[in-house]
Image 1 (cartoon, rainbow, N blue to C red):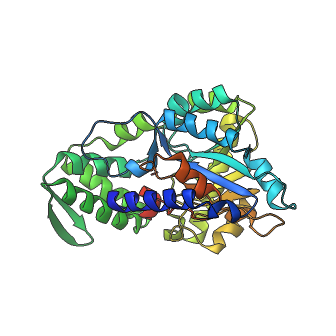
Image 2 (image 1 turned 180 degrees about the vertical axis):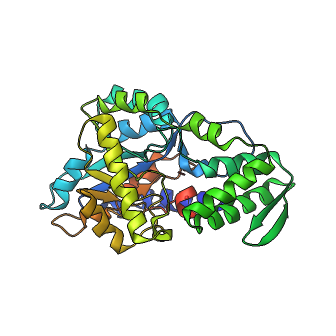
Length: 349
């Protein structure tokens, strides 16, 4: 979603709020809300993934508003319970965070702790292990610093001139989509080649941004926190053979349980959009021992078993939309937003 499209979306949501019709159309039992990066606004000119970020202040204002709007802020365990029972009079909100980034501990947790609300963090274990590859961050760094980029795409050497911000944004969208289409080994080779060409330390960049086990254990110690799995390396499951995809799920769960010494019952499909996982991955999640699995496909959770627990929708909030009125319309289920940023490019992380 471009900045212009985000502005149009914001205007439509504002109009829906003031029309009042949305309050007559509230749908479902509740909403799972997804956040990715929570940190103060950055001053850099090139920020292609700004849609995936909110500030700690916006998170604070959101929680205040949810309480004022009389939502029940619930854990993912309670979501699973309400999804299979008759609808209650009060709708729920579940706050979830895709926890590759240390932001969730540094910037989000102080807000969550102050409000004493439950929350869920989904973590691919390679990142706290210090071996995950945040290729999207490396791609952003390379495009930001260069005016011309060359790389191998298949058997062809490709060259791109990117002197303007518009051209940089266009290339980021194009290359992130291309990288997302590759098998995991090919993606890793492609981003390492790019990083070698342009002197970007992929390992250091990934470790610097990532949540580590110490911070994750501190989060897990809070009884209001639920830690979920998101595989080991955060691959696009649909690009993998079935045995490899199942291994990513089961290994991620086993590593997390061994590290935190607790059951891990909840799962997030990596990237989570319609292109990144298929119906067969629901069966794999169940085989791996997960009770629920969340996507980034927008929607509301319907009661009485109408929403499968292994295909729970989540609304990803576009960080460029700063209006709580717009959020209230989206949470009513009348106009869910498209999943922005990395998840949309099939993704934030």
